[in-house]
Length: 99
Image (cartoon, rainbow, N blue to C red; front, side, top):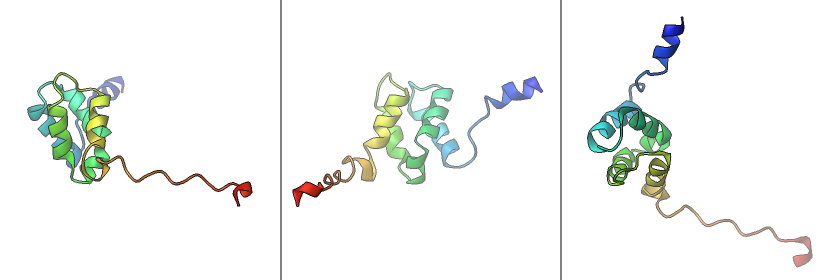
């Protein structure tokens, strides 16, 4: 029982975009280890669903020595529709006394 729990902790990514991202990461982002690739691809799974995984991986690969959560997050937020920081904040609510 205990052995299956330990082995389960090192399971590979499920088939699909996350597994494809992990495989591509291991070849493209040389600074990332296999566990860092798996964690990073899981971290940006929403971008993978938006077909932006290639852009995220290019950014991570260009990051040099870094392959941490901050690198993955920075790369995920600077691509596609998210590159501009999103829509502007809504105006503050009008106060009762403003009218």
